[in-house]
Length: 192
Image (cartoon, rainbow, N blue to C red; front, side):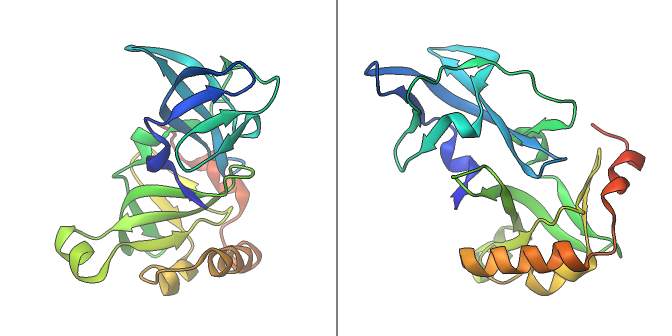
């Protein structure tokens, strides 16, 4: 499991050529597939947007992102339901009943396939210091709106727990089976 914010600024390496291709400067969230849709690269001081890589083209390491053999960065043709991490960060997250769970600080995802597992949320600096940040599982019924993100009420029981990777996967599977929002909810929300 990786945090998207930790990847920003990491070098992208082409091992087969022995060169640094660029640095990751932005991640895109694919809200329909609930995964990381792609990474935007910066070469030197220039952001070559939307030139980047897809998660299936790279191996995510502790110190660098490595292009898989024979893969090359490319112009990313991102679908309209892909949004930059910087537009989602700090967005408030609510339950369907209107309870504010905090603001999104980071996105947790599987490095193997880019699947989003959860959001790290902050409920203010004092609460972060005293209790730590919460991790909220992100089921497929999550609604990504212009101003807020809405999750099923069932996530409230897990919002303040520090979940291990396996626990997060189990909770996410259970939420996807039991949530009352349907996947068509996306069509009724004004996108940003």
